[in-house]
Length: 570
Image (cartoon, rainbow, N blue to C red):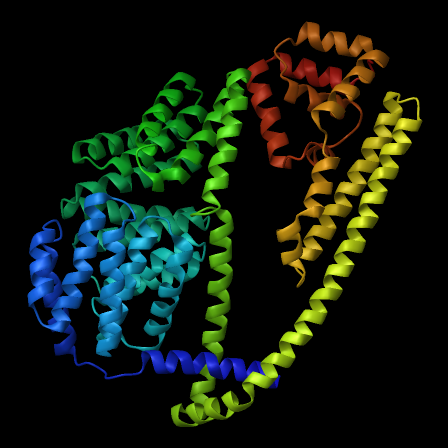
């Protein structure tokens, strides 16, 4: 308890000292905002901004250099050395000036740049500092409070904290002039986070308000985006015709404006909706157009991943087995690349760190209210005197606990590996009839369930990092799933013992894919959706979608197939 208290005090002192400083009057903040507005129109004229940066006062140089960095980013449309240099230089100079408001603005500008090009983990510390600052200071002490709240809100939404993102965007809305492009933008994004939260009714209300606002102020790009977002609502309702019409209008306007990124987003959504509506060729064409844009920028990797995922579903419907293997390999490569950028793993990690920081921040705020600033700083000084010794003792304790966790983890891996070897040996020792295969698969199902339970237990424990680093449980789990070799042996034995049923399948239903056949044979032997998904290493939803696609493909023959599966014919 004492150690935790010391850590909290050290954490509080860091932010107290970092964010302490003069409180600026509204006139001072207004001066900064006017300087930004005056220089912002030169964002494409880097030569003019360099002149201001070199000649003006220190405060104006910080503003001009930040805008200069933004100008290079807009020109090159990527992370680049010139932008990095000027952003970091402006932050260093703002730190030296002791101007808290200006430092916050410079740091959030840099964070917005990193966020734009999907360097999410690098942007995280600056957004956290900004979030902490907005909780400590009123809007009057922030440069462009609407932009500050909006920028932080976008990051929170991207890492999945939709409720907190909406809170920040509503603050931004409060400080934004109605009937403006900024107001329409914020309404639209509040709608997006409601949509991602599954609150489709609220999302539609905000999308329509944003649509009307953008139309009123003649913001054509935002108007196009709201059309695309309203198409998402129509897609959820199953009104694919309306969704297609809205997306086509979105694409038309975006192309006219030269808005490549929004065109790409709308083309991807159009491809997905057309596929759902059964317009296969049109869907493929829309995805082809989207891919042309996606490959033009390195920060569009996630869009390329989305395109590949939709294409896989599309080609499965078209039975284009030859291209599926290439697509799956491409998807795997994209996922590997995204793990280093804006993929699920970095975002989850950033979200976890954010939640921890928010928790510690709330504790620090409660501590400040109880003790007061002077007493807090005194406590930090006292704590620092004994902190090194306590930290050393704590680290030794952690090392011992880590050793015991590794021993337990290794023992569990050995036990599960032995059990797997036992199952494999028993199968090899039998005659390997279909009944033997059934018993073997049931054992596999139980072992898979056990493995999933163990993995979930580890994820919730302090040993979670061991599985993340070594992945031995995952390796054992993957070895239990039905491999191609397992499948060929199983199918061969099934065909040998139940030739009548198998021949009816191949004769009456020649369009069945290998994936369809696996599910049907397992279903015939009495395995339910949960058991099938576990054995094949796919989700229950994937099993359900596979059946739905098969039903659409077979039409009336699907009922005949199900009667055959559920009958006593072998």
